[in-house]
Length: 77
Image 1 (cartoon, rainbow, N blue to C red):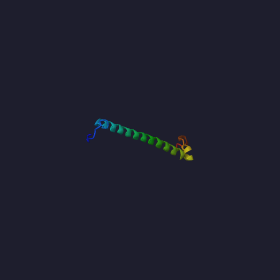
Image 2 (spheres, rainbow, N blue to C red; image 1 turned 60 degrees about the horizontal axis):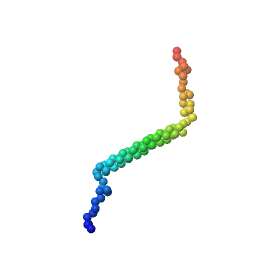
Image 3 (cartoon, rainbow, N blue to C red; image 1 turned 90 degrees about the vertical axis):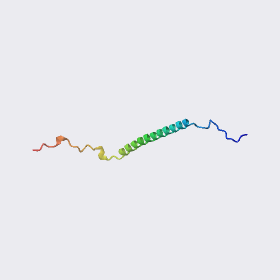
Image 4 (spheres, helix red, strand yellow; image 1 turned 135 degrees about the vertical axis):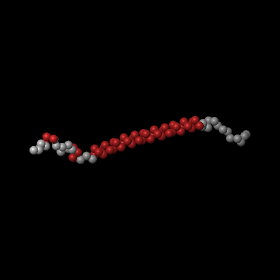
């Protein structure tokens, strides 16, 4: 019976495996960030359009009613 610790090659990770795992982790977090940003932009646009729709005044329905035609003005003598 020896007192030396046994080294298992299955538990050791090579530098290449660590690098691959690190790269995949970076790509994964970047993808998650892009999804969160896209959802935020979409929800912000929806909330803004609903806010604009709900805060209309009666004057907004007739906003072009006070525009005068050019034919209504006299030539001036």
